[in-house]
Length: 307
Image 1 (spheres, rainbow, N blue to C red):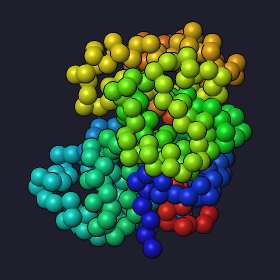
Image 2 (tube, rainbow, N blue to C red):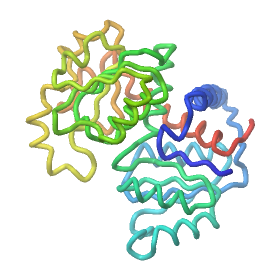
Image 3 (cartoon, rainbow, N blue to C red):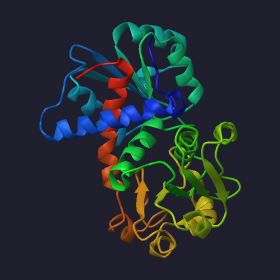
Image 4 (cartoon, rainbow, N blue to C red):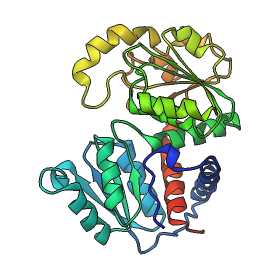
């Protein structure tokens, strides 16, 4: 039966841990110059309605390292909901390709596409969720902390975006102490939040106090204050969110060995200072690299391939 990866909750806790193990092996094999080719002879479509640097680069490179070939389609070429229905596009593309990676706006669009696709679909970002990013972040945290369970994770800034929502999603699969420092008008999606709370697996706290959010934290995470398509709101957001800037003063309230994360692209000087982003606590570029390895592991898992 074909599997999709549209949200962290599409995988069980056991599956997430298995994928992390696969990623570790694939990363080591890549460093040895011995990339396995379990997808040789397969073809993947990258359908990106939103522009991308890291996501496109890591997916195209990773898929080719696994032995498959890729074709990229921009929004102008896709035209779903304009030139043709999502249903028709899904039916046609799944006749041509073995895997479809989609980066789009409405989460409902990728859900509908996956419903009608005959091949696996991976969410490379929607306005609601960015699951591949968070999977890579878990991998990065484990590399630096040697564990994931019961860590204190502080996410500060725009708590209403797809990264914050995906962290809340993760809290329904792995036991963490998640603190979200944000303003009352920028809290996570209500449905995503309630689903995570109802599992009772993690402690989730939302606070307007940045110091309370990062107190004794193992990880501090931030993102841009206005996501793609919202840049006209940046001045309004900056006034409200400036107290959540990740700077050396904020870091002083966390653990001495805290790591700092940002999914990129960053607006240096806004949500994070140069001193922190380029400082000894930053693992930002490890995060970026690990997108490559975790996405390969997700694909291998979806196909049930051995290597």
